[in-house]
Image (cartoon, rainbow, N blue to C red):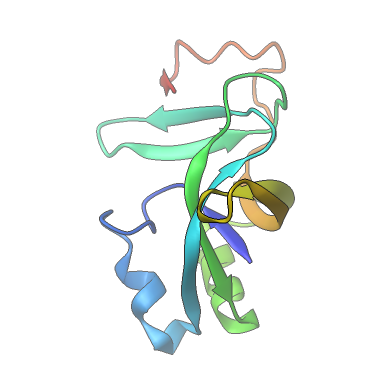
Amino acid sequence: FCHVYGTPKRGQPNHKITLDQSHGLAAFRGRGCTVESFLLMIADEHNIPWLVDLPGKGRCVAGEIYEVDDQMLRFLDDFEGCPSMYQRTALQVRVLEALGTAFSALCTIQPPMHPNGCYKHVCHIR
């Protein structure tokens, strides 16, 4: 399972990649939210989001949960720049439709560039 919080979500510009079966299979399984809080950064005029690996800072991050096959996971890793820009990390995600049931899902997350957590000068923080 993957927790998608950025442009591949439904209604976002890159959602089409999850629908293209030439990349592999991805099935929407529900809306989710990370159990732990993270900084969600929004960069530049293209609204490119990313999570920073500073657990406990920020807030729980809402997204969508997809069941993906190995081919789609490899495609998503390439699309998202894993492992050069991001790391694919297993996080606890609460399924909103399942009354808060939590399980492990893979999510892209970036190691902190600014260990003190100060990113205000580089992007918008949500």
